[in-house]
Length: 322
Image 1: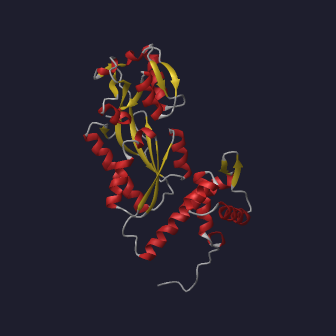
Image 2: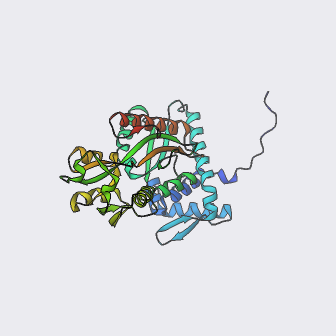
Image 3: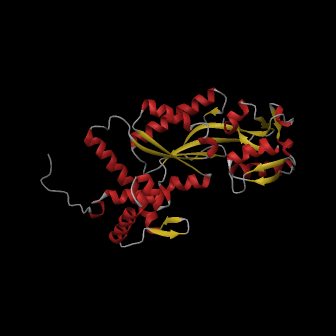
């Protein structure tokens, strides 16, 4: 039996969700100009929305910087709640329209470039065929950035490398990847199927700078093996690593999926590093306050299927470390 009393909720701050959509876009893009383009609006209107929100909250939500805007302490605290509010509002709208049977909405994925590269094109095509109402947004960054986006609720799904024997309990281990010595076409060392770790001694490398999970693992093993790793260039850009190895005949260390196309086409060579092997896990996590739940679940399931298919082709090993 329904109660005869009305629920006494004060919803002044949610009276105009348009302003909160502006807040979300500005926070994620770090710029009123980029947010205006994304929302198909104009900068002056977004500025008025932002000023109105700050008056209603009696607090500054953003700090102005030389490169745009960044969330203030108050803005950072309310960001995940605003994102959850807008996701719930979107879900409610779909329920009212009778559209909730089909997964719909925008799903934001945060990932490392080496993982995104072999996956996103296929993910987009398969979602377009099976769930056309889902829109993807892809953010690429370092492990630290992806971790931060996940904890802040800026991404719905995060795909990360994990080192060690296990991933955090709340994460799904998708695959285990080996590390390869990558060289230019015609290189003698990488013409072999496998190379022992000691082969890396004093090679001219382009490697990521610290802090970086792979670099930490490489440096630790080098100390154990009493060899010297000699990066002549430190760079965190995957495209730069690939092009520099090919053009300057340097070496780098990458998982095979990061250079899959280049190796298949004969532009680069790859030899698996053994004695010891350097393995890491590809793990997937979802944000606590995730976006449209059915859409996030559909995207996560499709990512899992793509990774499983990649294991069958030899791109990585299925599941966790054995």
